[in-house]
Image (tube, rainbow, N blue to C red):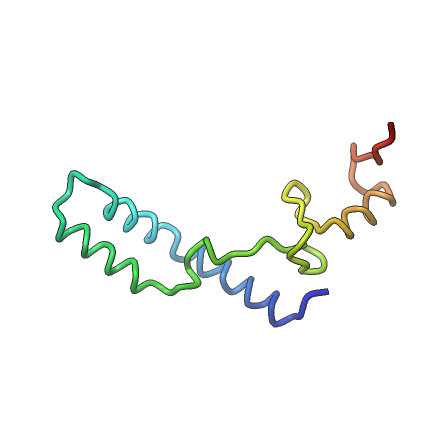
Length: 101
């Protein structure tokens, strides 16, 4: 189980990303638009740099919904490999069966 502080930090980042998502998207669009003049684009880049660092989606980390484990994460289920196996063996995920060949 991951430390509570790490899980809380990740949740805080997710909230910041959600909060600044539209503003960040608009500033990125302006800064990449080659039809605009350079001072306008530079101003957009400066405003983008003034946003909180944790509002960038690059700083997010996929974590298991149950344990907070960052490694062995399956996006489709939102779980780490350990918890996915436990839940699948109990038959709690419809359509998921153990492979055998």
